[in-house]
Length: 383
Image (cartoon, rainbow, N blue to C red; front, side, top):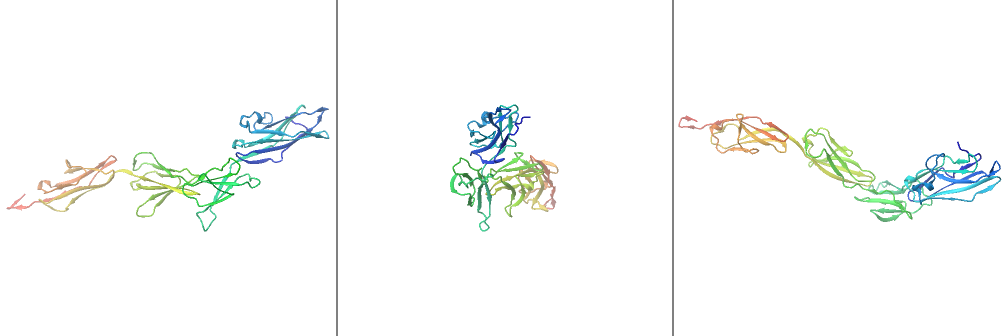
């Protein structure tokens, strides 16, 4: 353990705050006995931020501080067998990584003559920030932008406002009605430092996982993302043509764990932050096999010989189904997917008919109908 009896280090402040890109001075005073055991003291000074008092890292030998850290010390004065000194560490072009605890250590020519000033000075390097509020009841779309820093800069330095990269005005506060595509930042005049850029959401991007065709019964997730600062909040809606859009979900994802054919439609993702809103549409087309397959006869009921009859098949399917026709359970070589017309029905057309609907996602048969052809009575003969 290294101590120097009756030696001390005093820091004017234990916490220092400064803006990134500016400079900061960290000062201290120290004192020590002029003579110890009749031998004069000689002092070497050293600053460090990393390591401990047994293995300090001198900033002069730290590459991160090369050209930025400068020491300056006043001449030591001694009175009544005690010596006093004052030193200052100046760090230019501050970086976020400079945030650390800075301590001063000095050594003398005395045995065990090493002394560290604890707890040191905590330096916090911060950016400018823009606070957004809407305090105008009569103009609720107007925003109040306030340029501020955790440091509370002395002397009320002039602030500069930028809108879409253009210098707009000076002052700590900027009242504005944000428009789509706007961006805002502030700066301290005289310093090459701007606050992080605040901007309205960009047009959202919507992706579907998994990609490709969507089959009924599968799990599907829609993801919405937008570049925005502050970060955007997301809301999903299903858009209906005959009624107001229906809110589906709050958040960037819309999840269908077991998607249904009724989920097909147009969806809208709204991305909104404090400055504005943008939206994007995305269609969902759910594929499924045939449902509700029906066969119809026109006309229906009893059919007279020689009359015209049309048999048609219908189903609910996506994509549309193709049909195979059957008479008395035997396949017919009729054109698929088209109604079949008998221009002049004959007795041999009498029978039971059905159709079979099929697409790549499934197949299903229709009901059966009996086409009963009533024959004409000619010269006492029944056909």
